[in-house]
Image (spheres, rainbow, N blue to C red):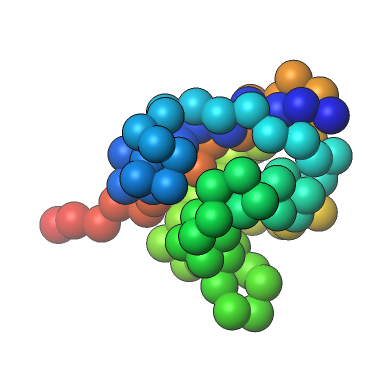
Length: 91
């Protein structure tokens, strides 16, 4: 199942400066693994050593924050738009 992933500027060095890529996967875990296969090194920037979404990264599947869905097990139906968004802090 092909899905579209929006890549934030900070991670575009992994995708040859592409702001959006298409990959395969029926769950977010499969999508991230597919990203890693096509764009080596990107997974370590999104997922920590324990296999969880990094604390400073927000991922949305069809505008739903995966932290409030099924996490990395969130389904990603064909055609779904996935957004990887680095957290922004300030004061």
